[in-house]
Amino acid sequence: MDLLQNIDLARLPKHLAIIMDGNGRWAKQQGLLRALGHESGTKSVKVIIESSAKLGIEFLTLYAFSTENWNRPKLEVETLMRVLINSLKKELTTLQKNNIKLTAIGNLDKLPKSAQKELLDVIDKTKGNTQMTLTLALSYGSREELVNAVRNICSKVKNNIISIDSIDDSIINEHLYTQNLPDVDLLIRTSGEHRISNFLLWQIAYAELYFTDILWPDFKEQDLYEAIISYQKRERRFGKTSEQIK
Image 1 (cartoon, rainbow, N blue to C red):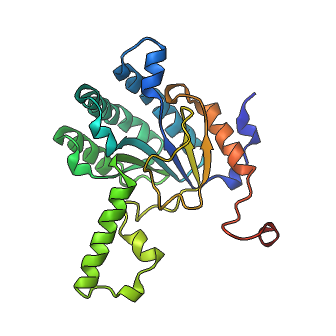
Image 2 (image 1 turned 135 degrees about the vertical axis):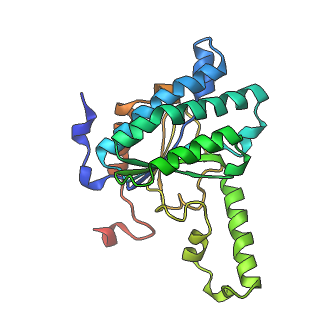
């Protein structure tokens, strides 16, 4: 049965974020090299991007490479960077066809120059698209993001650009990588792990969390629909009581 008919299109998560986990374990189960797991995972990326755009989700953020991932074996890191470059080249047509704007967050200066060039090229070519904003978290770590924000705010206080008393949620938001994105409504993590792994710690303060045992290369359109149906069954109170919400 197609689960799409069970989704209320008027109550979609505005901002969907996904921790795409399990590529390596998927490859191991198939008796393949980890690198082939990452390559297979790009097929799910394409499916989920197109499915999200079709539903009408406005913002989709994918955790593609963390600051901690630089500590992986050199060959795997090189493979991940190659997969990134190839995917950006191949998916430009998909982004344009679906009117999707690409952005990226993280310490992008650490990426290889070839990856930076390809990334910035696709960002530039899709900057006028308006259907959905797709954000890739690359060389991203939420703690690093928060440390950078604190440093920048402290520098502005020191130089009398802002006052200490003016610092609030909005000031912090303005200094995050995600300053142009709304808070996350639904966070999905694949592969059976139940942790956040240093991803959007500030931005998921009131997000609904959805964990699935499905490994990322096996995560398809119907799995996305299941996650959204689960999200729509929940009562989002934001600190209020059920009676206040009703």
